[in-house]
Image (cartoon, rainbow, N blue to C red; front, side, top):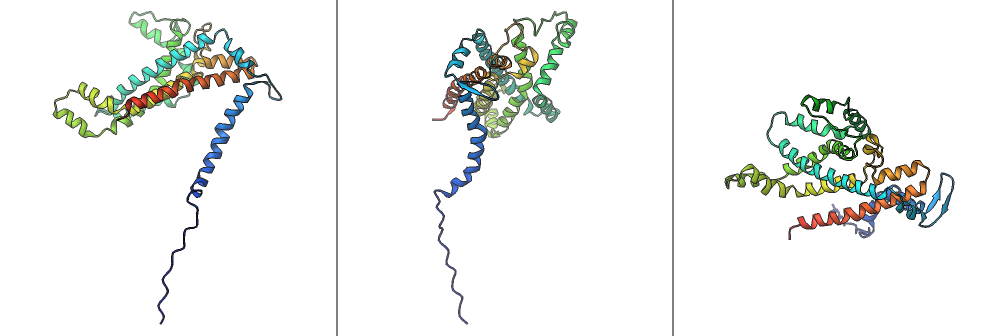
Length: 298
């Protein structure tokens, strides 16, 4: 009986340099259709005077008119203040809640659900609800303050408090997500660091500032970037609670753009959106690089 011939392995005839790139094609198509096409379309329509049926190329006239908007400076200042206040409060409250909700306390899982619940609620629904709560006479907040003999302010109709009141509601709604990110960051810290700190006699305060806070830096960077971007483009909560009022005291850039759109200036509002996009990129990209460079280990 003749012994079978050993099988010879077929040479690989697939070009390893081109073949893997085909797997990227579906994602590239989706990215192009969902992101690149709308972005370049917006750039084009920002240079036109357009309706649903026709468009007329007018160059940079929309941008010139947008920068002449009388309340643009006020909207820009409110946008920056809103983004800074909400980002800072979400970081501070998020890490505080993250530390508490990773410690061995009673009903920890239930409390985590309670903190995260506002994230799941509709933003417009939250805005309408807190508008009722913050009513100067009949709102539950001022009625609760009256029990303690404190006269509550007109939260949404006093220009001194209106934007800050909306920012606090934004923090209440978004701090659950910041807490969740901090919880993921804190539980990933190896327990050996805390054990070594306790052996060295470190107090809980020293453990927080020397172990928890530095090693939670990736979570902090993520929350700062996400909160700052969210604050810069915030619109729905502000519009649901004040519609930019009283007067124009709570107008942000997004609400200025929306009012132009409501008035039928579609090209002008599109140019405003392009300006807002560039503003976010100019502020966030250097901030992101700065935070990552500062936290990198050399």
